[in-house]
Length: 126
Image (cartoon, rainbow, N blue to C red; front, side, top):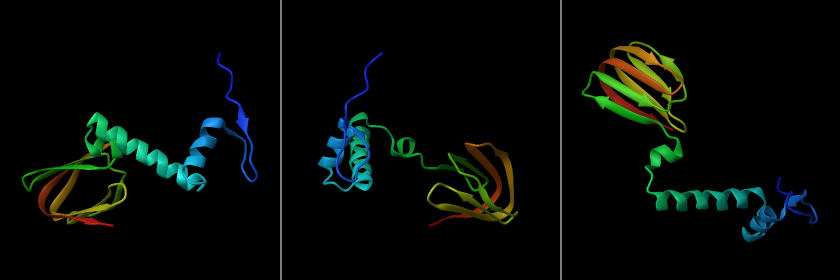
């Protein structure tokens, strides 16, 4: 078993591992916000190097439209409103509004959603 890293204490900060303390120091002492910015930048750099598609890494919804009759949505976060003319789906940071006629939810799981009917339009509402 590896020993725990040594702790650092500075005025106004809880004890942190030395690495975290150094990272906080490098971010200009912005505390948690600076640390989050730094980690976000590290994540972006990793994405560019690995050449991963952004939608996989960012965990954003992916929408596939098959003609005007079927819609497939992956990584949604739930249905917000539903009628045969309009369906609002939480797409993670944006609401996806699907308008049409005779809309029906064929499949809905935690991760995917399949909708059929005559789809007239898709709108992204922030």
